[in-house]
Image (tube, rainbow, N blue to C red; front, side, top):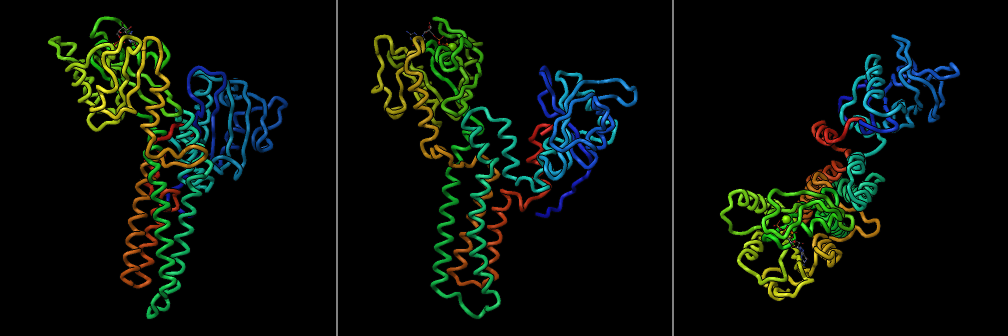
Length: 468
Ligand SMILES: Nc1nc2c(ncn2[C@@H]2O[C@H](COP(=O)(O)OP(=O)(O)OP(=O)(O)O)[C@@H](O)[C@H]2O)c(=O)[nH]1
Ligand SMILES: [Mg+2]
């Protein structure tokens, strides 16, 4: 792959581990001068020289010495990884120093005083991509692995990192290239029409390809949820047990629970993992008609949260009759995905599922007791079912689409393929037909990065952390 990108050959360095308290920190150096630079500051105990003489991929014990003052900075382990067998494909060195705030920074500053410069966010991975160590979809998966909050999120990120998505795109590209080859073979014989059997076959293949791409596209909704989680608002009139339910879901006493209506005023946010999907839960103030100014601010905030939410858990007190405040709560649902927790179901029931089915399908109503912790697992199952109903396909090791950039590129490729089909029907010239196929191919190539711009790369890698 040849990209027209400025690739500076600076040697870069950064702390790759999280900063703060910690036993060990890893300082990462990559570039032509890595070995030379570390050689100047790393001294092995037996007085043998540093990375230039060290065997690649072997760990050595020694000290980092400030060559100006000749003072020992830290006792460390040091490993060199010589090009091309490193993460970036360049010569790399890792220094494993003591953790904390000071030591790693001091070592880093020593490196900066020599010939290394601070690495930009994601620059190690950018170099890995530019050196063909991984494609762009895999590079994107690196941050997904680091940021994954749930098992499911991690599984998808690892699949993408291993190349599952890239392989799938590769299959699409192969089909396209075959079709393109047949069309281009015709370019030299412009007078001859493509014979009708071949034409039908190419049309069939293209339709099949469009269907396959569409199947992958359909997984985006689930992929997005897996990757980013779901903003979820717990709504209800005062005193129905919203805060009790939040506490049950997160399994700790986070929100204040009291028998006084209007206890929660400000909203409270907590994340939970529901069967692999991250829910960003917000407990809100009880919605009711009130003259209390402060309570009203809370209620307005609750309604705003409901409006922003992708999922609403509406809580109804089953031990009371449904009233106008409950109806106001149910009104907030609108077109948002929602489940109802028919709470306080441990008490005598005054409101049942039948009273609610005009507002929401019966299979989205779950009887709960937030006081005794019953119905919570059923509530989670119902939520999962609702969120992944249309596209639950990540059972096993099926790759799903998690990135908007990939979705848009796939949509563009379908557009070009449709245009190709139209042109085939209109018996356009082979040159013209090939053009559409090339555009479709380029759209697929954007996902894996064969086709890219500096701008796209800038946007992708700026989201990375420094040191990755
Ligand atoms: N019997 C019974 N009582 C419950 C249940 N859930 C909550 N409660 C009680 O109902 C009262 C109100 O609970 P909260 O969780 O504070 O209700 P809330 O909806 O957050 O109330 P506000 O913050 O005031 O809007 C408390 O006394 C709880 O112990 C339940 O399932 N069964
Ligand atoms: Mg509350």
